Amino acid sequence: MDRLQEGEESLPKPSLPPEEAAIIEKVLGNDDLLREVFRRFSLPTSLVRIACVCRRWLRIVSSQGFLDDFRRLHPPRLLGSFPSKPQDLPKLLPCRELPEDLIAVTSHAKAYFSRVSKNIPFGKYVILDMRNGHMLVAIVDVCDRTRIAVIVCTPFKAAPPVYLPFSQLSAYRGTNKGEFDMFEFLPEDGGDGRSYFEVRVIKRYNGDPRFILATVGSCEGGVRGEYRATEPMRLPKGWCWSCRSTRGLLCGNKFYVFSNDEYILGLDLATMILFYIYLPEEVEMVNTEYDYYKNVDLSRGEGSNFYLIYLKGFQICVWLHDTRHSDNTSNWMLIDTISLLQVFDALAKHDFSSQGCRIYLLERSGDNAEFVYLSISDTIDNYSDTDYLLHLKTRAVEVVSESHWQTTSLLNPFMMIWPPTFPAVMNEEDEDERGHAGL
Image (cartoon, rainbow, N blue to C red):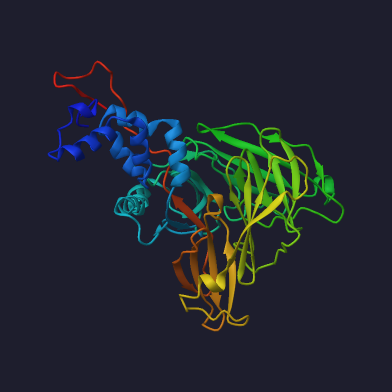
């Protein structure tokens, strides 16, 4: 990388009227004013360019306080979506109207699997989880669907996939003849590219449908550790364990998953304690013909809080759950209500009569309830499906994919990584006679 200057005093002086030059000099010489200017850039790629100007600017934009403020103002952008159904190669469906910087990023990601597939065993790809630039993938046999490999891929980089130890189970639901449900997921920050968790919820412990327990296995640094187990937990009368989700939610070192008995099962990964959370009284789960069609979903919040997204008819309600309380009561707060009739009014594409279409949530909503995936089936139009991305805060909506005969699958959000990777600083004494300092 080119050597860059330590301070603005060595930068070429602009040819401007004295009044304007004085204003610029005042901004460039004041760190607080520079922070305010830099906060107004909306993309982390801009921060990397800023950091390459000089060491002083690098120190400003790479400080933890600035990064926390920037992320709060400009959450990581959604770049596109990867379908999770078994496929020859994962295919990125990029978002529309992305800035030029991010279009280049998605182009690199779209070509990633074509470049690395020659080094991967032949089979179908099933995406298990995606987080902060890392993708946990199972390669399954085309015929009997047994696992061939579990790998971590990095579509943002040119690095080859990392092979990790795995359990030989179905890559679809993770069920083992009804004995337990298994969920595999990356660490909350995406991890180091060599780590993931495996949670199993054991049904009918000692033959009693009201007793369950959970085991947790982890692969850290490419090495599988020993399994840990919870104490058995007895569910309330009338409840049993029947998994409703193909995936759960990891949030604040706790794992959550829906049950068919209309509660959320929780597992504290640190203390290995099982617990359950009642749903809001207004929420009523509905049964659907496909695992990935839902009317409820969970979303990560700040800290250990999380959101419940509920679809009923043509309305979406968003609740926030406060996990600071330790009991099993609701602790829910309704924070938003969205009318889908208003959101989709401008599209004028679907017949929203009760006989004309069906609407479902697809699992994997965005963090902080930023967005959801919706699948709309036109029952009078040869059962064609259209998958939409709905930004809950702005009410903006865009088409993700269109298909026929209900070939929709779970969609995985492909997000911009955070924090950005800044250039490394060379030794302070590594400076030439002109005052240039290397980064």
